[in-house]
Length: 372
Image (cartoon, rainbow, N blue to C red; front, top):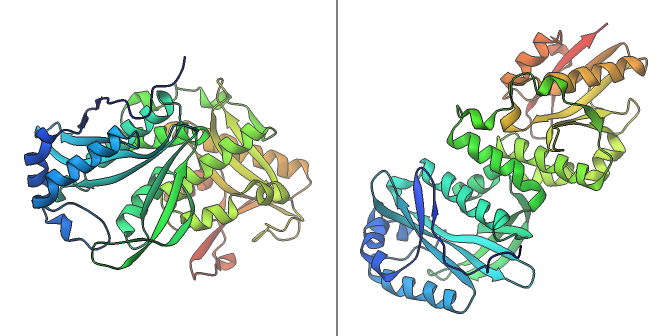
C-alpha cells in the first residue's frame, strides 16, 4: 500500500490533545493562546503576536497549498480550547522526509502532557502512515528548553547550522538539527508512551517473558542500528548523556572495536536491551584491573524495565567473564542511576569507592565489583 501524500490534511487525536488542520476559524483562540505568557516576546524563538496571527495562519495555509507544509492547531481536550500550533514542514515528497517544527504553546500548556502527546501523534503518523525515511527537528542553539525536549525524545543530534537564519530582532541564529529514523522509532514510541502513561500495562512485557529472552551478540546491520538507537534513546532521553556525547561514543566502529555488543531480543526481533562486554585488553577498558572483566552502557527499553532484562544482560556478562578466565566483573556507573545500582547490589556487586574516578568534566564515576 502506498503512503499518504505528505500534505494531505488529517486530524490526529489522543487522550490529551487533538491536532486539527489549521484554519482561519482558529484565529481568535490562537490570539488568546499567544497572549498567555506573551510568548511572542521570547528572543530565541519565532511566535506570532496577537495582531499578526491572521497573517501567520494565511502564511502557513499558503505553504500547505504549495505542498511544503501541513499545519495544525493544537487543541487541549481537557479545556476544549486551542493552545498552540505545530506543523509538518520542509516536506520532501521525493524521499518522504519531513520536519516537525514551527511549534509553540501557550504558557499554561507548557510542561504538561500536551507537547509529549503532540510529538507522539505526529511521529506515529509520520512513520506508520506517511512512511517517511526520517523526521527532522530544528531549534535555536540558544533555546535550551527546546533542545532538551528534543533530546529527551531520543532524537540524534546531526549538527549545527551556523548563522542559519536572521531573527525578527535582527540577530543571526545558529540552528541545531536533530533527526529520528525508522529504526529508532520503536524506542522513541515506547519512551513517549511510558512518559504519558507509566502505569499503563500496554507498555510492559508479559510476566516472565523477558526471563527467556535470548542474549546474543549483535551481528547484522539491523542489530547494530537498533542497538545504537536504543542506547541513544536511553542515555540521552533519560539525561545521562548529551546528544553530542552520545553521537561521539555510541558508534558502531567504536563499540565493535571495544568489545562484544550483547542484545536481548523479543520474539519479534525487537531489541529490548543492550550491554557492551569489553575486551579485557581493549581501549575502552577504564576501571578493570589485571584479571578483571568490565562491561559498559547497559540499557533497557522503557517498556521492558522491571522485567528482568537488565539482570539477564548482566548475568550474560558474568558468564562471559568467567569463561574468559577473569576473576571478577567490574563496571562504573553515574551517581544519577540509583535503579541500576540497586540491580548491581542485588546481583552481588559491591561498591569499591577507593576506585571511583572523575571524568574529564569532573563527574564522579562509581565503581562496582563482583568477584568469585
